[in-house]
Length: 47
Image (tube, rainbow, N blue to C red; front, side):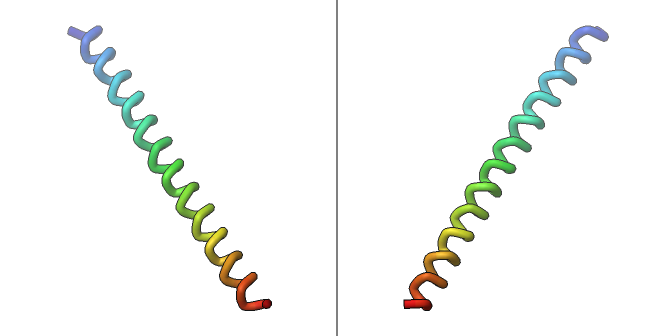
């Protein structure tokens, strides 16, 4: 019984880590996109 609970706990931590990494990746790409858009906007204003 203890082994199955421990195994499930490890699996849930693993899934939580994957979810966090996925969310962090999404946030990173969104900030990258936002920075690129603002950079393009300022570049157009300078012309």
